[in-house]
Amino acid sequence: MGIVNKVIGVCRFSYLGDAGFQTLKGGPEEAARQLYAPGRMERRFAYFENICLPSLAAQTDLDFRLVVLIGKSMPGPWRRRLRALKEAHTFLDICAIDPVGPLQSSRRAFRKGVSEPTDFVTGFRIDDDDAVAIDFIEKTREISDNLIKLNWATKEVPAAVCFHRGIYWDMKRDADQFWDHSEVMPLGLASAMITRPDAIENIYRWNHRKLAAHARCWIDPHDFMFVRTLHAHNDSDRSIPPPALQLPDWQARKLFRERFGLNPKRLLPIMKKLHEEGSGMARQLASEADADMADDDGTDGAAE
Image (cartoon, helix red, strand yellow):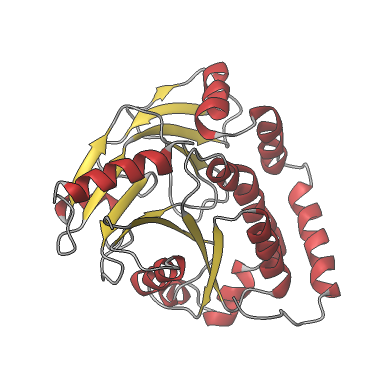
């Protein structure tokens, strides 16, 4: 029997680790209140359901797992919504844990994705508002398998597969929203790390900009492999890199369809409406979510 290499992704979905509590004066309760505010959660689901998941569902190789990492404190309605998505997508799994640091939480999430014995895990990370190309899993598997065969990635020495070119989508702009950019250093998005399944290291171990200082990196700067979104609701600072080149709208739409499995005719109006000032959409979403919360009986069924 040959070497087994499983491709597993982790998406931190409104998961506030223990370090996050230090940034809020109100402590864990205030952190949870802000994190699970209905308007914010509806926006996160809007990104996840319309950008991230469609790109993964369109993969040419569906033999992978995506583990959605959440906190045990996530209210019932949001957990049920995630479970409904899990029923619709066979590659999806959920890992609910208490607040811990980013490395420990990601290690537990990757372990959740290992459902059978494996020699290696090729682990990738993705945010709920980003997308990867439809051949990301296929190419990542092919390259990582070859790196293992070449003994370039071993159980003692991790190695990373990094795709550097993608589209930056700035939703805050009225025009010129799409930009073509090839990263100088690895990006967390469209990168994966080959490790043994019980390794301390994974793709979350180091700041992605410093990844090449700690792991062997195989790099491809040519193909469009990711869509990275910029909007008013980013949980981290993002901006269009200065060397990026503007993409005409028609070309971005074509790439969305052909490279990322996205439907721009449907997607772009949804995102525009979500970000339009004065549209009242966020308030409407929050109101609907509040009603759902009020109808909740307070139980959440079996734990994931």
